[in-house]
Amino acid sequence: MNLIILSDLHLLGPEDPFYPAVLTLIREANRGDRLVFAGDVFELFVGAKKLFLERHAEFLSASRDAAARGVSIDYIEGNHDFLLEKVFGEISGFRVHDGGLEFEIDGKCFYVAHGDQVDRSDFRYLVLRRFFRSVIMRAFVRLAPDALIDWLGTRMSKKSRKNGAASRDRQTRRADRLRPIFREFATRQVARGADFVVLGHSHDADELAITAGDRHGFYMNTGDPRSNGSYVSWMTGSGELIRMKLISPSSPARG
Image 1 (cartoon, rainbow, N blue to C red):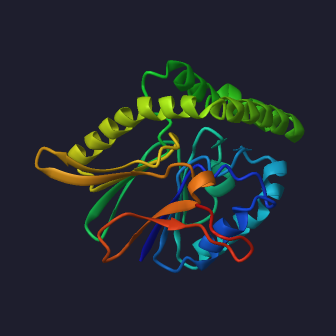
Image 2: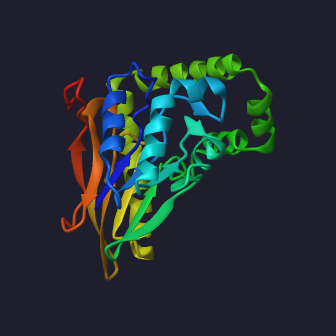
């Protein structure tokens, strides 16, 4: 069986060049395979709003078909896609998670999370994250017009992208600051029993073999698929996490 983990693709919609590649992965998954969408798969998908359901109808259809043929699917909500339990939770075989996910394959323990809760010093974001999942926010998303949710979300996303692309030096400094924090978090998961730890969010394609006491494990960050054009995979019998290229019939691999 194959394990496929995707995070931080920030898909804009069907016109996005990566969209066909993601649909291909879903459609080619076989019975017994496991797909894990580890947050920020979409640039914006909040609640079961008609606008988002129509925009990502192909993704939903492909996911329903995959689940129906025996593919196990998990969706870990990120900071661009949340309040999705009513969207995906009703699909048999499709599970939605607000935090980290732990599971076992062939006697190996995997821990996968989006990673937005790893940096506990980012109090501003952690408070904002809690608010976005609050009863107040849920009511607002349910009652607000689709166009307003889309406008607010797009505005915030553009601001985030602008800040993230401010300078290469800034991105490097952010990665340098977050890398030891994410590695320490991964080390704690290995000490707790994980053999493989996969995180996203930081856009830092880091990898590290970890020794924690008498335990050994491996950490991999999905990095920035918009740049490296890859996803994380594990195959029965391989014994290791690898990066695979996102390839679709309509667009070449990027990397």
